[in-house]
Image (cartoon, rainbow, N blue to C red):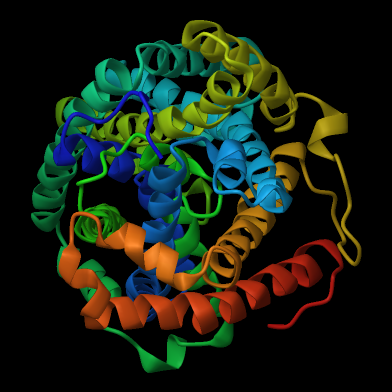
Length: 461
């Protein structure tokens, strides 16, 4: 298929953008508290295995579909002459919109904390519940964040997405490495590293395995079409097999480094490893305060600047999903598509913005079957999109690639840029994973999530 579509200028540009899509708050915010909840190194080992054994084959498959079709997720299946599978594309775009609607709110919190750290307001951690109810402040930060995202995406693939990714990804890496080095100098850092790096077999439970798989899938942005979209901007001669491995390695490395940074922080202050989602927003500001006014401002602001960059690289890829759909399917100018998408997504995110105590209705939005307490709107959207639609999307991609598009056509696409792929052990491994492992495991995740989350039927309690 020939296309005059805008392209990434080189391999580094694509890898930086695709890695930026994968690297986000899931790596630096969600990953540490999942590791803490999962008992440390036991969770880490399972997570690493799943990233390379299950997620890598799906990652390169999504990229291959995008490059083959030269279209957004909706148009891809039509271009490949499988219109009955277009529903996967629509679900992907919908999933991306839903995720961005609440992800942008959290990103606004993160950027707001960066500002507060610069001002030396370490007490904000003690007032987090009040902070998120200050709609004017957090709403303003969220509006600013989505405006910056839209501005970058409006500049196009090469001048916007690629250029921003080439700047932000190396900067993100430098900041996190600097914070890791500093963390190693803290008192009791060795105990944090021991918890994080030395597995305790007794901590390895079915629930930990399930959580690690969910984290691996979420952190690599699989199942929502972002990589199909980025793949459609990839040149035919680029090596997807190698580039996909580097993207996976980059994503895993940032998450791993986040653990090397966070757990020495935690153990140096005698904090709980099971701080949950509040670990970043409630617990760490107090730790930064203990470093003193000058060092606390430096370390605290760098940390939340790191989170802001990680969030922005992901919001860019999420924004590109509906934009590419409007441009491809409705022949809309990119500038119009971007700002229309940004406006709609911000509106959709308002219930998530006010559902953290400001609005009683959206704070107590829904009570799942078998649940004792109601669930807020943001959590409901996260459960619906990140925890349910993502694994379903991944399952659908795996089934489509092997049983509908056919493995030989997928492998032919993957062989462009790497002729040796067809006869390699990697090809056999990718084919086996897509045909057997991915459908089985992702199918189980999808079913278990529905029963556990929405129906109150628990498998691990």
